[in-house]
Amino acid sequence: MREVAIIGIGMMKWGELWEKSIRDLCVEAALNCLKDAGTDRVDSITVGTMSSGLFTGQEHLASIVPDYLGTKNAPAMRVESACASGGLAVKSGFMEVASGLSDFVLAVGVEKMTDVSGGEATYALATAADQEWEGFHGVTFPGLYAMMALAHMEKYGTTREQLADVAVKNHFNGSMNSHAQFPMKVTREQVMNSVMVADPIRILDCSPITDGAAAVLLTTVEEAQKITNHPLTVISGIGHATDTIALSQRSDLYSLKAVEIATERALKMAGKTIENIDFAEVHDCFTIAEIMVMEAMGVVKPGQGGPATSDGFSSLEGSFPINPSGGLKSKGHPVGATGVAQIVEAVNQLRGLSENRQIKNAKTALTQNMGGSGGSSVVHILEVK
Amino acid sequence: MQVPRFWREIPKRYRLEAGKCSKCGYIAFPQRLICPECGAKEFDKMNLAGKGKLATYTIIRVAPEGFGDQVPYAVGVIELDEGIRTMAQITDCDPETLKIGDRLVSKFRRINEEGKTGAIMYGYKFVPDVGI
Image 1 (cartoon, rainbow over the protein chains, first blue to last red):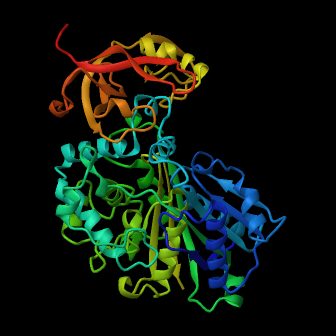
Image 2: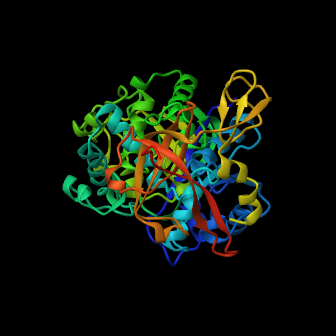
Image 3: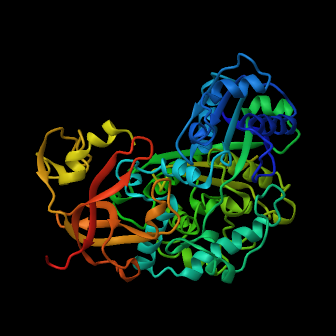
């Protein structure tokens, strides 16, 4: 297997981008990425999107992206694993480069979510759950995470304040990210007094509905060294795992098995332990998710995610910074783009270019992307050489 | 939801029909073709009793399309007496008074109406078990 480097990263300010179509978003992220890479060579494209069909009525992005990017006739494929589609697009690109099938692969993640009403968006997102045995009963995504939150509170004594502190931390980080959709700071009181969505999850516990895209360019280390002026960043580990689609069928209701297994696999491939990781970008689609992901990754012991967050363990200055970008909470969550944007942030940090939110001496990063209520997860480990 | 998609699940939705692995006894609800525990492909049909206790729940206040007229409504994971879990709405009670561990029993109820075809979909909801 060939060693794979990331030589280009690109995205744009995320938000409600009414003037931009799904194809505009893909092309803008891709062009920013190619400019950053210093090459426009694209041999192949992977596109991650959860549900361009339900959100925009448009499938077949595997034709639209190469077409509008001006790379006519280039091979492209769309991959999907709900909210982990972006991470899967990067993994797919990695496989193409590592296998020798292509030398330069562009991985794009996108979701255009505001072309539909809030109710339609809620429905589209709910299709990442078990439609026959969860969606049928009127369960929403906040509802699924709310049920996990209550189970976690019951099992470990996790508090409402600890959930709020995840949002406070991530919005603080996001306030320094020019790409973030909601770059405002929030207080614990604001989170705890915000509108209830699905008890005990309030609106400020939820990641937002977002339009956005992100792209990374992957190539071999050999090619990267010929082109890039940036510090060489490589993908040294990938872990990918799944769990039951329905929450009720899991072995328990307060842990994320797919995240645990994906992390173990990624660390094993990279020849590392979690102690060797300097920081992580994780899938905080809801505040409880970040707490459960910390525990699943082995960053803290089960039940310690909440107290550790409130103690500042995962802050920018803490012993294990999590979501320096602001996470899904503040940066936004265009579902298919999120996994790619996590890589964008990790590379930017490893290059030392993250300005006010730069983590000191960051050499090894972990990104964790998750589909549905934990039915799939993709983990990447990145290192700067 | 188009009618055939609803109709094909009626045995499960109306009668809580499950499959019991003839090799290891694993109960699959909904039914499966392969036992996730032992890999066997033979199942004996059984009906669940529809009784159990609340494992976790939430109160939905922002509903997806088609459920807006029902908010606020409770949904929960129910641990059935047969040792398996399922998810359903919890009704006939003030959702604010629910507690993990509450005894519940299933009832046949109207779940939703499909917007385009107007088909009414029925299935199970759970209610507090008051011994009736």
